[in-house]
Image (cartoon, rainbow, N blue to C red; front, side, top):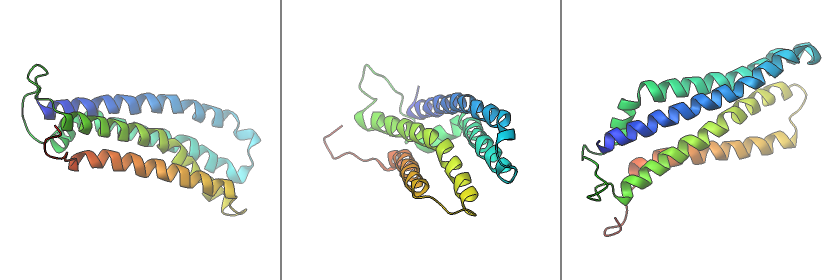
Length: 165
């Protein structure tokens, strides 16, 4: 197994995690469909989109990570050095890259449903006035997305100080 193979494995595992999150989010679609009769007619489509869109995004992310895990591994992997835990070839830098990529995907996957629901909420509240609570939630979820994407992209440029491997 090479470092590229290891990154491909991380991408595939992250894809399966997104798939599980999408299946978990399906319950909100069902609840929304069941409760459509109690939602005002002018807001029904917004609520339906708010429940379906996160599932679609998570499924698309899962599909991409699983299907193209080898390509992602090539993009994230730096070389084709074989990994051997006995010879300490798997250094601190490689482990940190794996952890950063994994945590980044985890944070983004948890933020996607909240983010899309907030966008729909902003659209719905656009006619009635946006409450302060919505903006606070938007900033929090936006920061979550930023941190997750930053950690995922940071692992590509990770360089440790000399002698710290």
